[in-house]
Amino acid sequence: MPLEATLLLVLDLVGTFAFALNGALTALRTARLDIVGVVTLGMITALGGGTIRDVLLDSLPPATFVDWRYLAVAAGGGLVAFVFGRHLERLNTPITVLDAAGLSLFAVTGASKAIVLGFGPAQAVIVGGITAVGGGTLRDVMIRRIPFVLTSELYAIPAFIGATALVVLSRLEVGVTAAAITGAALCFAIRMLGVRFGLNAPYPLAPPAPTPDDE
Image 1 (tube, one colour):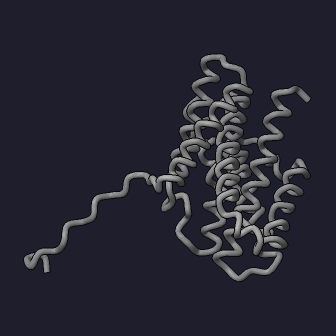
Image 2 (spheres, helix red, strand yellow):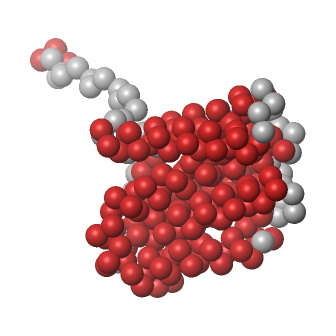
């Protein structure tokens, strides 16, 4: 396997494990689920974004159903969260860092795959962002809460910025490895700054208070 393809596969699998672990821990925190529920939500978080990506790119069947390693890594992350969840709760900061790493890796791998398949730069950026946040959004819908991506500190924005950086560098004929590392690092840095300082995307202005004439 070419070096660049191997790098993208490794990044994809590391991101898969990170998202599975974080998704399963979220399930443990917010819903009373058995082992099947916890592992399933972990796998959906880890694999959902990549599956949506491959459907959008018409790269079928999705990689997650062709390569057993994706399913094994995602299931492993869910099982680790289920077995050690009580102890992992003490590691909230490392888990947040791991999730930011998964976000970054998925953003650049999603955009990279779109570029490899011949899609344009705008489509590649969109696919990168969807790959990064799609699984978590599916998870939140399944546990009946507003998707985290719509209410958290900076989350989707770093993913789109990281994907954009990769696309721009690729257009400048920078090597895939350097472009991927730069895009992922940028996404990771912005996400962690959002966590550290509680930064959020702009919210709409509050509606004016009703006047007596409006009542």
